[in-house]
Length: 309
Ligand SMILES: C[S@@+](CC[C@H](N)C(=O)[O-])C[C@H]1O[C@@H](n2cnc3c(N)ncnc32)[C@H](O)[C@@H]1O
Image (cartoon, rainbow, N blue to C red):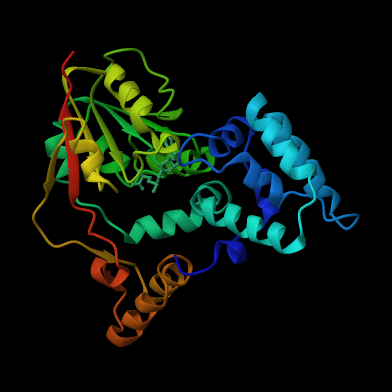
């Protein structure tokens, strides 16, 4: 990520999250932002604190579960030197960069994923043709739309309403009638037991509890019928899944990011990819960015599990 989160977003932007989401992203579980760190970021700036920030701090405090609320309140009301408060603010914004992107600037995320294609061979591995499939952590639908063209029914689940609204509009524009949009998260999938033939999660599910973890995996297994498959596309930590019985594969074929214009490519590179990507665009004068330039593995690997009960 090129731009510093602290320059892309401000602490006030946390106001964009609703109560359930504040409770999801601030907490003591792995992958969430510790309440004490957020408390230090919101520590009072003597009398100069803008009232909006005080109001937001009160709202966060009310949103948190009791233990977390206590840790947040203690840190917020403690004496926090200005440099420590500034570094806590930077750390909070850095850790919430993607969540703030999804909730505050969903169009920027859509721009990124419009160019950043993922390998759809994973749909074959998931046996999606004519099936009922959950796209878990669907976002704005990078996988949902191609999936809906093959599956019987797609449940597109995500915790971020701004991305789901974008997805809803895209589904309507494409004339697809077999997509049901659900607000939910890996810890609580709003579907009954054994209700889907397959689950696909692309660049969404991970080992940390806030990104699914052990509990999220149990939940994905609960909703998948026996013999159905869970497919994790572009996993960050394939080893975590393999230790839990998943197979791992890298699909063949070349895959790159391709944007509709140089202008789009530059805008995305400036916001998300960094200097090397900008230099590559300037050198090639083509709106394409190979993943090796981005320093990211290409999105064509996957982990999958056949569910046994
Ligand atoms: C990198 S985006 C990927 C979105 C989409 N699958 C794609 O490939 O474009 C990660 C998505 O995971 C969602 N997400 C984050 N934490 C989640 C959780 N605990 N449960 C379900 N989805 C989550 C985010 O809201 C976001 O839409």
